[in-house]
View 1 (cartoon, rainbow, N blue to C red):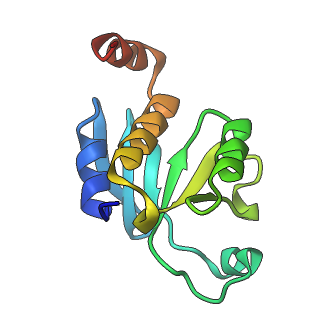
View 2: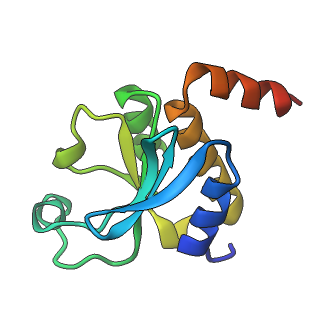
Length: 132
């Protein structure tokens, strides 16, 4: 597995249409058409407590998903990579241990987050252009 980092997230996110990079609370935040789809998400004290840990073991990527069911399925299928905290209950986003993600999987996560957030017209155009 090749190690990935924030530069990889940046490259993948900014390669998608109508995407920009900004900051939110001092952390990297990528948007499509003004709506966030992936972001740097340091764990807060309540997050650490909910996870039963005392310090953050590595960088955390937040990523939008289609819905709560998708988030829960990802966490169930691969809990070493995907997780959530009570802060995100009822919210269609999943947390990802960035330093555990294979490069190919990171591309899928970023693209899927973009697809979950992009306006319908933009999403359709992108899907039509990338149909296999």
